[in-house]
Amino acid sequence: MAFLIGGANSDSGAYQIDNSLRFSDSNYLTIDNTDENGEGVNFTLSVWLKMTSYAVGGYQGIFSVFKDSNDYFEIYKDNSEKLQICQNINGTNVCYQNQDFAFHDYSAWYHLVVSFNNSASGEINKIKVYINGTEISADEKVTNSNPFADMGLGDSAYDTRIGAYRDNTSATWNGYMAELHLVAGTTLTASSFGETDDNGVWIPIKYTGSYGENGFFLEFQETGTSQNASGMGADTSGNVNHLAVTGLSSVDVTTDTPTNNFATWNPVYKASNVTLSEGSCKAAIAGSGQSRSVMSTIAVASGKWYWEIKYTTDVEAGFVSVITTDFNVYGSSLSNNGSDDNVGYISGGNKYINGSATSYGNGWDDGDIVGVALNIDDNEVVFYKNGTAQNSGTAISKTFSGFYYASAQHTSSSGTSNFEVNFGNPTFSISSGNADANGYGNFEYAVPSNYYALCTKNLAEYG
Image (cartoon, rainbow, N blue to C red; front, side):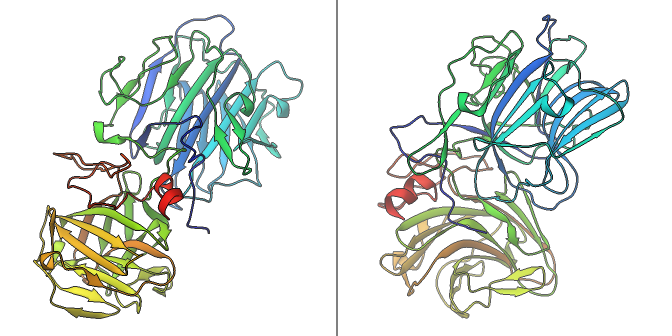
């Protein structure tokens, strides 16, 4: 898997997406449908998705139109990372699946377009699916002699849900969504929402069409929890079809988008006893006999970078570090505490360089925020405790060669470390708010001069 994942578009002169919404367990948006003749027959859904949970089992709902357990239409990712589109009519199921495509890249954004044309000839032709502008074919259709039918979008007995799987609102999307269009009554292709740039990369464009009475456009610009224009589910299509919010809070509105992709923890490259949540920005690591780790989705080989980590429990087993790919792998477990190319800051106050611990700074405890200023260009690192540079600001000297990842560890055989990383889109409340010099990120403490958040726009300029 490639780790250096660019955003869909880092050109500031092109169409930009400013916000996304971070979903996790039991988070979703919903709206009651209204009666509009003909609008349930055809529709188009366009949404950008970034996934943050891997091989955890269970389904993850993306979109559903739900009446009851016998009548619904749904789009979801199944437990084999494949896209499923199913309809249930009076308890009889019909499904669409492509066996060749699966969601495998947890570092990047995908653009998904699903169009439904109930008047098309042949059941297999009624649904068209586009991933990053390319149509994928339906090579499997599971049915009990039941055709696709009106999917209920124009029926007031149904409601529409974003990030939820039919009536099971615990099987919700785990990851990010951005730029969501629901066009009711019209079948469109991916070219209405995106295009291929000069580098062959699929990028978003501004949609200029109509939405139909039951359609909406979600830009996730607001942070409120009410079902109105100030809420996270605010409809900016002009229809005023605002969605109700369940389980989401203001910190879930982020600037991690297809046009500026931020680092998170990597759900693939982590120890087996690491549990990630909140868009792979929260981690829980249980002790299991040796140090266990998680690493970032983005690696850097040059430049100056800043991020923050807040440990919340079992901080005495905490270890914040920067590592190369030269980590130790034990089966499905990942340990980098003993790496021979590692620099870190242990909760007891020591620094840790290439496997050797020596005196460095103050210890840190539950609730403290550790800042990391990584300067690969000049071969040095400064760690911060609650905004104060350790060792009187004297940098740790470290020869860097190759690509380096942000990392955090649990260094004990017992207990569980819980911590939250802030690469620029925090999961914890920020009392001050500090961006880097380019205006990217939201950090608790001031970003050191000439250091930048780990995101693709900064990588394009300094990486």
